Amino acid sequence: MTGKTHITLGVAGTVALLVLSNRSIESSTYILGASVLGSLVPDLDHPSAKLNQKILPVKNSFFKKVIYLIIGGILLYFDTKIRSRFLTLLGITIILTGLSRHRGFTHSILGLAMFSLTSYLGAVYYGIGNIYTGFIAGYAIHLIADFFTNSGIELFYPLSKKCKSPITVTTGGLGENLILLISILYLSGVVFNGLGLL
Image (cartoon, rainbow, N blue to C red; front, side, top):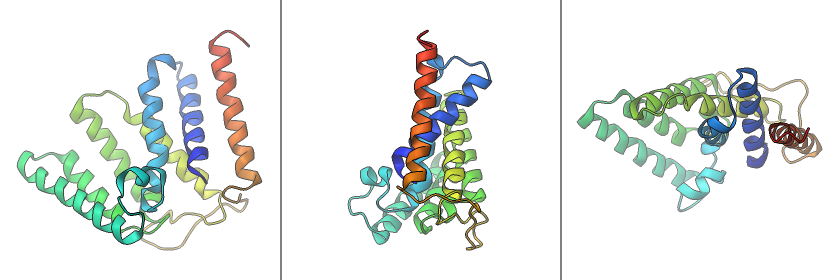
């Protein structure tokens, strides 16, 4: 699916979780921001992804590998100085992301687990509370959405077999646009209800 659909689905899913847990959406804006990031991170394995537009000077697979290997190596180097499990895991996760093909490591249970643990350790390390819940929700919803696309995902990476739903939608097609519209309508309903307009 496209980046805008992933962002909208990630935010809609996180809002639904906040509503179900009786949490104030206004006081959870940082969790919603983390869900936006989490909904985009799985596509770091693609050189042209939204986040890679900001990270990579040249948008191709070779430069993606080089840049991510350098970033991961720097994080592991700093970890030898300050001994942080967060930096260790982040460095390894970044290196695996750089080496991954599209819809491989970052679209798997292993990728979800490593990024989730990294976000949790980062939140604890920097003392930023439960912001990781939004990140994990956005990330997981991204994987679920891509599971319903024609291309599927390597859910059990490092096994290369792609898994997909029996019912699929085409990226950028009518089905995806319908999902995007429903997500926007849901979010609009939550906003209008919060403002007392519904």
